[in-house]
Length: 56
Image (cartoon, rainbow, N blue to C red; front, side):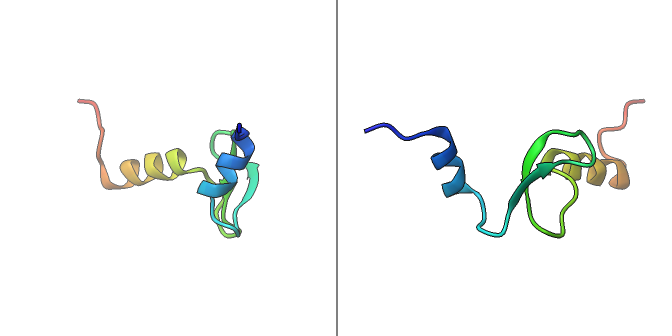
């Protein structure tokens, strides 16, 4: 028995998530109705706000 990638992704995403383009990077991602950015973009903006990962 083989499982498709789409079936595996459906198992790992929340039922309210809809696949949409991220407003930050443009990649397709499962986003909750209130979300506009994918997880990497949200983490990246959080790092910028807290001053982490700054190069000297």
